Image (cartoon, one colour):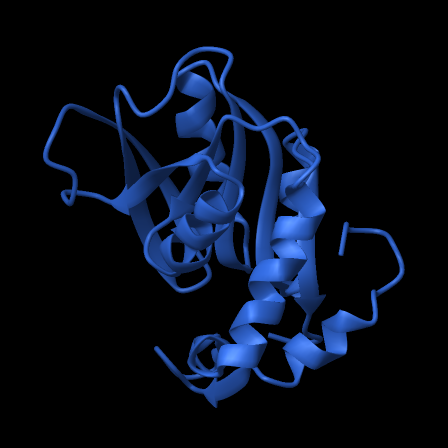
Length: 186
């Protein structure tokens, strides 16, 4: 759903198939596990179709997915839209010249990297991850793409955890945001 709009009918269907794992990776965190979405062929198809239908009439040059679960959805959506795919990886995982950006997580800090030639100035990019929590990962990924001169058409995720404030921060970065469903609490 585009942040700020009424929830679409498919949101509850997708939300009901996400597993919540309490106290992982540390005490107090309610981890939203998307693997049940991927394991069921019908649910995975519905999920991919939601994104494909949302973006099929948009002018895009490439899809960028954030390590690691953003790779799963992002590469399939890129394929379905007949676009290339750009991986945004955790630090130290890319073999060529990279640019890097550090950010804060809800339970630590991390860095992401992008190949220095991953996109060209003016490329119109769809940026995908699985979940928006504090927004740090998505904002860091967007900063990397912008440093290469790309235009981010929209940031997208399966799940938004609005109480952690990430979607608000993403919108404050002048990024449009599309999410499929959200969860109260964190």
